[in-house]
Structure formats: C-alpha cells, structure tokens
Image 1 (cartoon, rainbow, N blue to C red):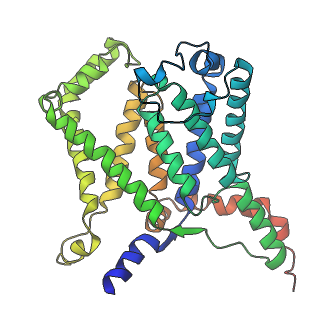
Image 2 (cartoon, rainbow, N blue to C red):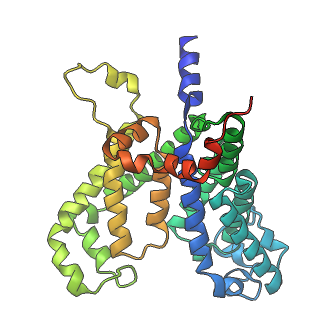
Amino acid sequence: MMFLRSLQAFFFSTQSARGFGLMRIAWATVAFSYFLMQWQDIDFFYGNDGFMNPDLSHTLMRSNLHYTFLAVVTSPHAVFALYLLMLLCIFATAVGIFPRFMLIASVLLMFSFHERDTMVLGGGDTLLRNIGFILAISPCIDAFSLKRLDAQHRNIEKTGTLLPPPTMSAWPYRLLLWQMIVLYGTSFWYKMLGTMWTSGTAVQAALHQPFFSRWPDSIINPLMPMAHLVDWASLIWEGLWILLLVPRWLTDLLPKQIPRIPLKRILMIFGIFFHGSIFILMDAGSFSLVMFTAYLGLIRDDDIAWFARLFPRVAALPSRFIRRIVGREMQRPAVS
C-alpha cells in the first residue's frame, strides 16, 4: 500500500499550473511566428502543385500509414484557408480564448501540415509537435489566459478576492521532464559515439559551417580558443540530465552536512546560456526557442518560490497586472 500511495503521489500530487500556462503561451507564440514566415510559400510547400508530389511523398520519407487533412484539402485556395484557420487557432491558444479547444485544433492542424511535407521540418518542429501534444492532454492549461482572467473578474465581483493560483496533477510535468531527459540523454549518447565532440572540434565545425553560422569568420574565429572547453562542457551538461532520474528519497539518505544541489535549476540555467548562444550564433530554425518553451513547463512551485526570493518585484508582476485590470471590482463590497 505504501508503494501505491507513493506512486499516486508521484503522478497525481498537485503542483502549480503556471509553468504550463507560460509554456502554452510560448508554444503558441513560436508556432505562430514560424508558420507566419511561410506565408508566401504555403502552396509551394504543402499544395499539390508544390515541389513535393503527394503521391510520392510516402516513398521518399515515410510509410503511408499516417493521415493529414491536406490529403483531402488539395486546392491552393483551400490549403491557404486551412493555413489561415491554423494561425487563428494558434493565436487564440496564445491569448487563452477557449484554450483547450483551440490548442487541440492547433495541434491537429500543425500535424497535418507537417505530415504533408516533412522535408521542410527541423528538430525544432519535431519538438514543437511533442510539446503541443503534451499540452493537449494536460489537465490544466488555463493559467495566464483570457479564460482565467474572466474567471478572476467574476470571482472578484462575487467575493471581492482573487482566485487561488491554478494547480494541476504532476504527471504532465513528469512526462515533459522525461522527454527532456530522453532528448539530452540520446544527444549525449550519439555524441560520445563519434570523435568530434571528444576531440573538441564539433563547435568549431558548426560555427564555420556557412549554412548554419549567422556571422562571418572574422567574428567567429576569436571565439575558437573556447571551443574545446564548450565541447566538453556541453557533453557534461547533457549527461547530467540523466541524474534527474535518481529518486529524491535516495538523496534524502545523504548526510545532512552535504548540501542539496538544485540540479534541475542549474541544468536549466546552463541550458539558457547554451541554447541562447546557439540562437545568437547559428541559424538552427526554431530549435532554441522551442527549448526555452519546454523549460517554462519545468517550472514548479519550489522554482517559483526560489525565483520570487531572488526577484520579488518581477514575481509580483502577474498579480499586480490582474489587480490593475480588475481593481475597480476589488474595491466593491462583496456580494452576500
């Protein structure tokens, strides 16, 4: 019975839903931005008259055991209309208008466009779909939404107080964290199979690749003395994500004199610098921004409290924003 209670607490204990609310906004913002960049190429990428013939696509990339709305929506005007509908759904997801319905519609439409032509996809697009699916099946994604703001407004009119912070079960967080461990763990494994990362030449090769580098060699070359250190630091950082699989009760067995290191926060802070550097120095598509999006979903109650202690004014901004918008109602007497 103790094992079952521990298992239930591991997956179904309550935690703050604010991290997933922020992840919903960031996910929709990134998706909207990158799909909007394809505005002039929609028919070329996804239409029947584009560069990828739908009758041959499965022979080039994957089997035909998949479905896309674009299998039946084929005319250029219909494809573009479906594209506009997807943008509308993604925008509504970002601001929180019927967030559950709009999110599911956005994910289905995104999958349809991606499955129509996988040759235009990158690693960021795959992760974008993965995060969208996790959000779609998560129990509470209403934080920081217009729906939530309307509920606050009605609660203030009725009671004169704000609603408590939204909560959710822990299992979506566990699922997202597992995906991040798999992502970094497999990346570490494949890098160790080769020699470029261990020899300290991987970063040099990537930054001197004209297809990816944003900057000329005159700016990149002065950074090369640090390339070997960055190679090994990246390997160690990715490998350390596997330690997040260690159960907390094992760390509780350590002597009290040994300080508890907030490993997840350290890894996330290093990841911000790592993916931020990739975004600044290299054109890797949406990958870096999507990774930042996933990091938002890893924020829990203890992370919020830690951040609030470090930056109290920034942490108080959401409450101040809500109070400013509905301040007049809060000054009214409660309805008995």
